[in-house]
Length: 133
Image 1 (cartoon, rainbow, N blue to C red):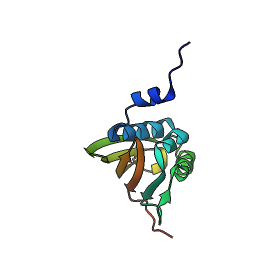
Image 2 (cartoon, rainbow, N blue to C red):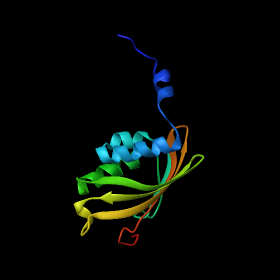
Image 3 (cartoon, rainbow, N blue to C red):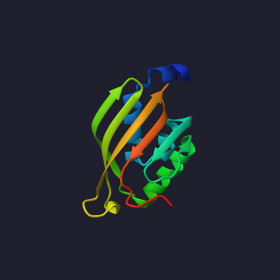
């Protein structure tokens, strides 16, 4: 058995901003909250339309995704439009779930900044259908 040093394995993984965002979509579709959280930097700033204040780091991402999957066990997402410029990625994507009501879809826009293979800023915009409280 040949064991490769972890640094060598990590160096072979595509850490480009687009690849990192593609990995987030794949983790969401696998319902893998832990894998999703690992893509966020410890000091990542996460802002979403359904929250009145930003969250910081990967732990709120993990908890939020676990709650989302509990509410929408059939959730899948699909990116339809991409803009990648340096360390910034903008995507338009569609969420699919019966829990989203008639039609079962919601369109979202996500603006991310990726550095050193980790998401450091994530701003997701959508209509949550309710005001902040």
